[in-house]
Image (cartoon, rainbow, N blue to C red; front, side, top):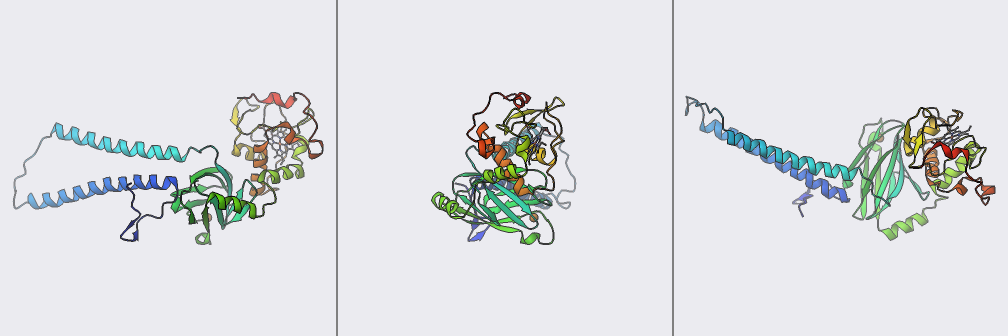
Length: 340
Ligand code: HEC
Ligand SMILES: [Cu+2]
């Protein structure tokens, strides 16, 4: 395997601890060798030509008017090299932007100057992230203030974390250990202290950690409580008198809006619906939803999103006290969207 992280004990590349790391290192080495090789070749030519064809030796220059074979040759050769770079890079890029199914999902909130992590099972961490080895992990990241950047050199992983917008990032760690996390976007006075540690654990240790880290309830469960406390439930009910759309099965569905357009109900759409309810009005509904901007923080918003994502059956939306009531037929709210 072509992979070099140290030369005589001197580290050239940081430890490679994710599936993508090895791939990216290979590409980086390839680019380095090609560009380094060409640079060297040109440097040697310049020096030799300068010596061999200096003014004193060849006072009379002989013009060469072109050589088709040579020109075709180097055009084709560079094209091939660039195409290899392009497709190789595009493959890695595509891989990086395709979230694998069955991944562990963790929410990340960046703020001046710390990293907050919220596991789906309810664990919350600050500046520490525990993940299992050999399992894909999807991070949904958002900033509470300015732009930060999530950077784990050992995973060859870096992505800006923006305010007002969820962005996903995924990785699969393949070496148990402790790795550094940095913020790589200058974000204020204590930017340099915005660091953390990623602990990659065996699957058994991770399961133990999940059990022992004292989560009170899952993120979706916290979201459900908020849904009741903030009285979302008064409008978004699963009964025929509800004034808001039924949120069951909303996540991942296409929503029809009153201006005739459609939108995919993803994390960012749900977030926008809560903060800017009037930005997009669901077809068949009045713009009566109040904004919750300023009333809930990023972490509560993420919990609400988790809860709405978890809504798969009507029963889940019933208030606690009539959970056992059977769903009572089709509801007017269901006509607003068509199942894909
Ligand atoms: C006063 C009633 C009311 C309250 C309270 C309310 N909503 Fe809404 N909500 C609506 C209405 C009406 C719509 C559809 C019109 C629109 O898009 O603004 C809507 C739309 C939504 C949508 C988009 C639904 C879709 O099908 O695309 C989401 C998500 C949502 N609300 C979440 C919430 C959450 C979470 C809360 C509590 C924090 C909440 N709502 C509180 C009335 C309400
Ligand atoms: Cu930062």
